[in-house]
Length: 274
Image (cartoon, rainbow, N blue to C red):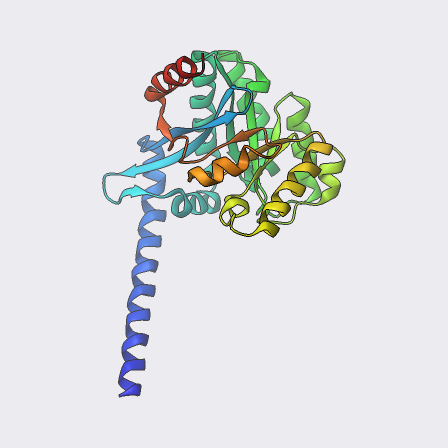
């Protein structure tokens, strides 16, 4: 009986593995066409500051007529392997600049950069120059996020320095999930950090609460902007109000919204606080 059960489990595992491989192949096959057909679009999640100012994070989404909604955790890695990430990033930046120019009461919008895009900083700088030639915008309102999980070489950090020299602030995203060198924080290589949601996922422990407080205190000593990600519950928000944070982001405030909904969101937000 045990052998039969083991064979059954092995068979199920093989079926799931085969299904995953087929889906991976299909997504890789269809992503190129998806980019050409503009199936990739941008949504915006609010970043709410303690001082009342509002920012947004621009996020890529894919709605496929074949696969339905495909999560970014699936299609972004494929895009990075195929170099489609550059085209997707360019589209997101263009959408972001449009939002920045349309809604003057937005302080900034952040865009994620992959390791490939950071390394190819000449391409990125050319894209930014081309966009600003057609649609001038305030550079400091376009903020770039670097995921901490990326493996960054000295060349990457040199590229980040070049991007910052053009007045685009840089944030470390998902802080706590990677190995950002403290030297880069001390040497003012970035402008802020976004604390990964794991920091506030368990507030039942006093030790965890102290860790969050001490971590943020360190960042404030270094004069870094601190955004707390993944705020989903009221008890998390209540705790956050007791510490020295700058901004929060998460579903408690708002899920990512379409560009067409930003005006309604801002009207409600500023009317509520005025």
